[in-house]
Image (cartoon, rainbow, N blue to C red; front, side, top):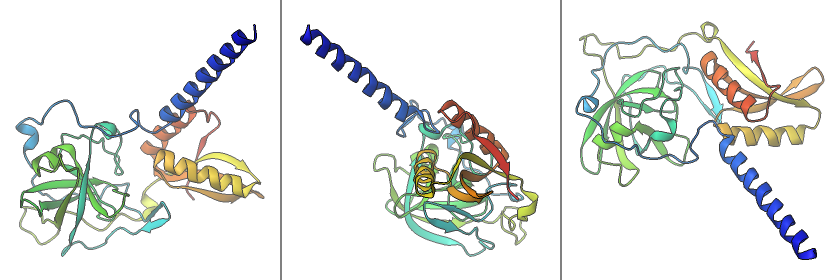
Length: 268
């Protein structure tokens, strides 16, 4: 009888541990835990590079922001911008999700993420190891890992022949539009007042140490800024600020992940 009870206890523990493991892997912003290479190669049409053209700055993604303990200021002037460093790429895990300027990330489009270039900016990226180059349109923020300076879409990385190594030494150069004028393909960011943004409040209480730990956990889990703020004598954990499309998307994910009382708050 004791053997049966022990076996039942072990079985219950295995089920509980399995459930915990499953929960931690799914309570993420993305359906995949790790990024992966897509199942097909780019088509000939997808390998065509965009032609730089004048575009007004995006209504979102062009504000100073803080993430992982660092504050990033968007560049006002990129007329002489060039940069050398390590490039990485992102693929299947992020495909179909919103970029920082509110567009949908397409791993088969010539796009990229950069920490401080205005959105959008057209840049030429040259692989310094093989001299191959590609023109991409920067419409996202990142990368926030190590010494990397740009995250390229899958198709751009394919064209630079850097998929096997995963990273490459590159040079980035901001490009001018083809219209012949001297203005770059970006203009200074719109005034912050014209961009409606929101926080998502997740918790509130008086235990500041616990709330700070929860803010740090949520920031690492969802890859968005998370802080504690004073609120009517207490403190609250908020994510953001984010533009409205990202706010709504993340709010839906949080509620499905066990935060049914999370709600959005307009940035003053």
